[in-house]
Length: 457
Ligand SMILES: NC(=O)CC[C@H](N)C(=O)O
Image (cartoon, rainbow, N blue to C red; front, side, top):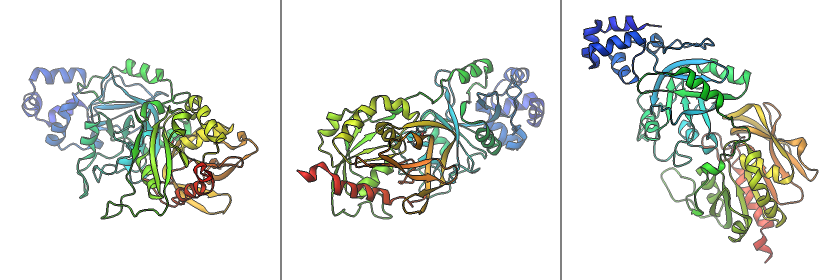
């Protein structure tokens, strides 16, 4: 780790440092005194001194509390357990009024960082990727799963490089800036991941101040005071404002028009923070989609004469969202409307059937989770992003477990024996991830073929 005196001498002393950074010698003396350099000067200093990230970043977890920012770092990641990680910030600067605070989680996906950052299920969470190179292909206008970045912050190992893709329309750090989201690099993400794995989910705060001033006691207070995801309903914050139609199907290489499905179904999708690729896949199997807000009443949903209802993925604690959705879902079940749920939708269906959910010690986030279909014995490699799970023992006798996770045996799917309703914990739409489970969209179409209330009329 290089200290501030060495950096100033590398720049050729105070006079030269002032000339290179275009600030007064007075200001350089203040930096020396405070042992901190404001963030906006780092790019120039790195360029002029030829310093590398490893010269600047301690790159180890520290439980002791350094009250001054080490020279070279300009951003910090604080964990609730007292861990400090100094690093180099990118994307938007932080502000004290709008902190990047939430639960820290890791994703093992090697691709699809843009889809992950825009997946609304990540509301209230900071994401660290176990894959060290994030940002290599920039960002583009097609790979969004929502209209904005929903994750609270991004934590990566390597600095973001120039985008190497013909599809890129904006480098990752610029795109983050446009969406007012901060990132930090130079972090030992392996050690960080082990800490999250071993100690379980906890609060974290990423701080990248423009003025280089770190009010550590304030930041520590904030990270401790954040209430945590348990008991939190964030679906209301990420759902759509009003009902609307969804028309786009899956994007086919070189052709933006999907083949016309032979049958069509009237489907109402309840949006708890839905990923766009789920809707595209539903259109692909013939669904005419009406998307309604998370708080839509049963009357409103039924007024669309649905052949089926889809329950989307979404953020935070299903038990909190269940308070206002279970009465609606119970009405739909009683009316024998075919129901298909994904992730949060799966957990809400379990609640409506009388089951319970709990917080996992270790969430599943990545594109490599093996799931076994208990009926066929077939194993699917799935894309996942969840921190809560359905307790299969809590299910009533007329509902059964259909899929399990082969990493930890947790529940991955349920079906009702009384009602035409089934759901999965994982993400058959992938985006990012493998497409082994696409058949589930077809299964929903078949359920509507058999049980649509409109068929009987
Ligand atoms: N992707 C999702 O829908 C996540 C569901 C829920 N928020 C969980 O973390 O378990």
